[in-house]
Length: 160
Image (tube, rainbow, N blue to C red; front, side, top):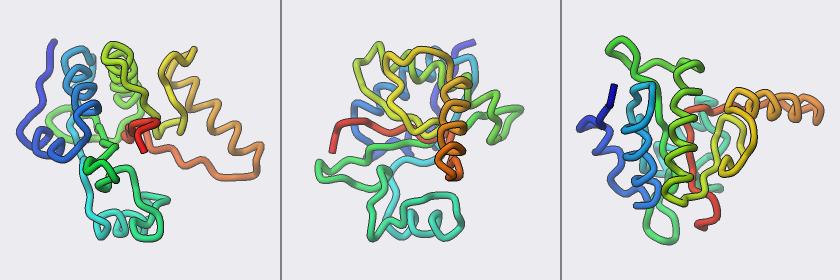
């Protein structure tokens, strides 16, 4: 089945860097899991509200998030959330399928991305998204730190 971005997703892509938009538009064509662009460009206040809820580690004021407008005038991140049975669901099985498509699309479009599931650059990375998440969690535990997995988050790498 081929999916398409809906009007809400397209609206969320307004103000997002064109290279990332290309990847998202290609990913929706090749994914096995329908998804929505849950968040694109954010204001500092929006970012700060997520920080206060514990949904982000970036406060939006002292540190600017990738979703906020960067020095080039574009947001550099999107959140892609599975759309399952007619509704948005934070479901890791769906997130992994989306990750497969995004990584493939990024390779096709020659756009380097960092994924919030493992907080690493995924282009050319061996293994599967599940493996990358597991490696990240193990690494953080060995450091005595908590993992902050943000599976829906995709950000441009090397653009700032």
